[in-house]
Length: 82
Image (cartoon, rainbow, N blue to C red; front, side, top):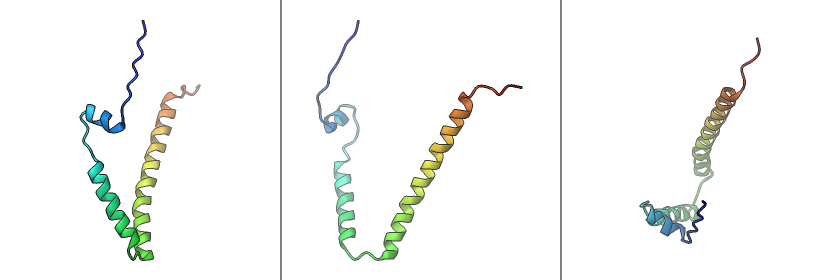
C-alpha cells in the first residue's frame, strides 16, 4: 500500500506549523543595517576586514567538510591486502 501526501503551503506557514520561530523581523533589521552601512562611507580597510572575517569562516568550514569526506572514504575502503 502506498500513500502520497501533497502539502501546499508557503515557507512561513510550514515554519509556523513546525513551531519554528519567525525570523523575518530579525532578517529585515539585519538587511536595513547592512544597507545603511553599505550606502555610507566605507573605507577599503573596513571592506578588507569584512571579507577577512567572512572568508575565515568559509575556509574553516570547507576544511571540516573535506576532513569528514576523507574520513568517511577511508572508513568505507576495503582493507589493504597483506
